[in-house]
Length: 221
Image: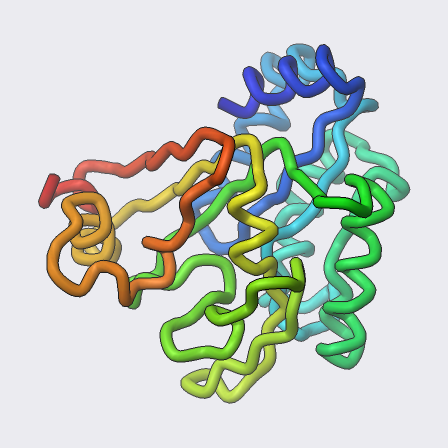
């Protein structure tokens, strides 16, 4: 999917804009893309990297989504810094969100920023990105990036909103493990109450949506 999306975007628009996900599942994807056999299949000079969400921590923190991607993908591929657009988790949350919204407008177009590919994870509670159940960001209709306070963690997060996510050309959920079985099954089988799970509201307006599950996560399908 990554290779196909990159080829299509570069062929059509000369550049490929991809938003990476945090967590443990994307790590294997990053390491695969950084292998020599895949490295040669992508024109990395024309790839621009963004993030779907970030914890409000410095970029060198072990909890930083950016740090994980830097170590597993960006550094091995020698991606220049000017092609990397991270969320500034070390800044005041609302200011960092406003700045990232400006970055998206500058790099993707002011009218309606549209990413070519977004990778998403899935939490046991049905959250994706930092769109957690019961948080204010779920109600956002205009802004593309917000600071979202997550009470159960007692911390702020930076996250893309539904308007930004659902504008993407391609969206890929990556979910693995028994802990993802219940939310994945409820959403994909549209069981009662599934609309209460934030990930269920990821529905691209004019793009493709793909769920990739391992056997444990997809056991109820």
